[in-house]
Image 1 (tube, rainbow, N blue to C red):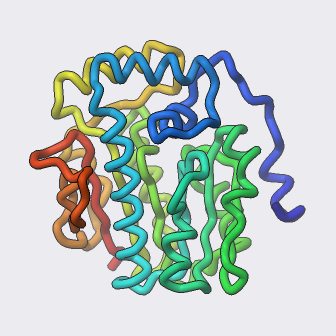
Image 2: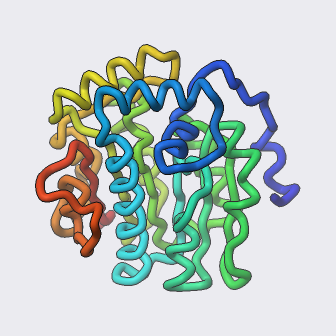
Image 3: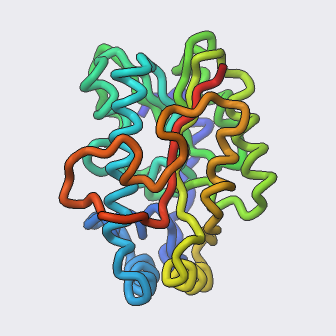
Amino acid sequence: MSDELSPSTERSEIDTSVPHSARIFGYWLGGKDNYPVDREAGDRVKELFPQIVDLARIGRHFLGRAVRYLAEEAGVRQFLDIGTGLPTVDNTHEVAQRVAPETRVVYVDNDPLVLAHAEALLTGLPDGATEYVHADVREPEKILAEAARTLDFDRPVAVILMGILAHVADYDEARSIVRRLLAPLPSGSYLAVRDGTDTDPAYREALRRYNATGAVPYHLRSPEQIAGFLDGLEPVEPGVVSCPHWRPEVSPLTPAGEVPLYGGIGRKP
């Protein structure tokens, strides 16, 4: 990690008494960077909604397809990935730089454990660049100021918001965050979003219990509300849909029907 980033990445203590969504998500994906409190919260959700593990993997596959589309078909060479989570396979820079080694990626997260592992996110190809900003999604101006050290806002940028806007309780505030993130970016920039929906009663009950664990609450929204994050943008076909149905690839994880996880991409005109 560069010394230049040190003012914005002050290392705070990792609180092992409160579950954290990034660590729980990593646990569902089979990761080891978690604590008993995270596993307990994750297991509570699994008891009521065993499909959560598949849902986590489906969400990760959606990220890969979205980034690959943006790099291959849309020609994007700059990514701002907010709510990064813990490093795992096929991180944004790995997918994008396989397409175009010169791609530049800035990761953003507010979990001190993610910060502690950020070096794993900064091992991109030498032709490009990867950096990390320790910040909260509710600080769009800080995020943009830090990201501008690595990204050129005169050229298109893809903003990645996977599973993060649901941590903002107020829908209008979440929409405002999206608008503020996109405001300084030029035409031809993109927004990719993914979040859980309120369309499955078992998932709603599992998240209700999860939110009672002391973790930062995750607020399920309707598919229409998730689509609303792309208001003012040109939607990329097939629009905002259940994630397995967004430009699907043959996979044993692809379910036959809908899952309560929706995502899509929009282009700034």
